[in-house]
Image (cartoon, rainbow, N blue to C red):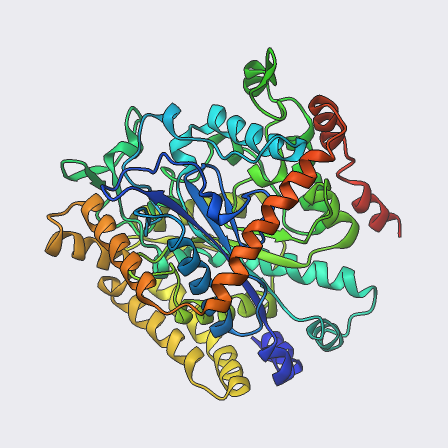
Length: 529
């Protein structure tokens, strides 16, 4: 705690007011009966390849809504709301599914892959998704969530580096600090699953034909009694194959090197699938990971990339720019999937991760982190659950209580900088949920299902989705905003046409050139320097 206090004191109020965040929110488009929409991405929303705010994720029916980068929580939430309003004015009678675990799904092969046009980059996106469907099945890819992108402003790094009495290149210090954040986050992210997990139940169509340990709550609805986030458990967005990767987060170099083999060396089961079937492509590559985005994780180091550039190469050459938190469920009780209080808790939590000591990880600890995550995902509200910390068993309330107390001075500093009590209030609400599991979103979901919807997950989520649609359509939307997004849609379609017109390489040449990039070139350069 001594080092945490020293680093926190080094951050000026204007730096704390300048924390940067942005949202990427995935949502399935559904029909009024709760079935997955089978319509193409609406033309009125522009091109899913080039639109800056509205694209598709795995499926043609899965929207991804992207805000810009904001120094203010309210401004970010306002833009996210605005994007939702625009979408609802373009999708007719459809709704956005409010929950992370999917709606009623058709047969696996009938879930449509995202389509991005005829350009090489557009074709590559669809081929990548086809590869995911061969490897993991399409149902798993329809799980949706909130990605929280977070960074400290540039002015923070000289202050922290001076407080640590560290010399050396500023970017090297920044890289080390972000990887320290990531290590601490991975150790503690179970707390976010407990506090904000909202997927304790699922529609039976999701597991059709699959082995599982879920219990039947009623016909068509499966659950686990103490679960918080099935999305983040073994049933959800997970991979046994990837679990064999012991990825080290001790440095940018160790991270890059531990992923490089999975991205470049053939993996026999995927080699058996093959890259091509005649003129059709099955996947981008036969390696364990086709591209970096295929690697699952609760958090990722990120930076903006150049056209055609691999993300790992960009990290190696220009360093970490921000982190992407990937373990947050959609909040089914909030029309846009996340509340301002959750934003503020994440800010304080992530600052705690970067300001507190962060020992190096080990293969043993990495395995423990995975076990803790799955325990909380499946049994987080079970009073008998225990988590492993430093080789000892502790309750979530004990460990979580310590973390919240350590976050208190951070929340106080943020409130002082903002002249508010909002961060303290967010921390206080988390404390209530930690002491009383019935106050968690996952418990509330099950309670609402039982009291109002005859224990039906499908009926609960559909009713909430339709309620959110009504709310967002009734909110006023300025004519200037409508005009701006209409222009954005037109511009994105024109940009896609321009990309397609400029296609000169055969797709196979493009694929090979993209995959042949030296992913460790930047890492080697930094090591040599």
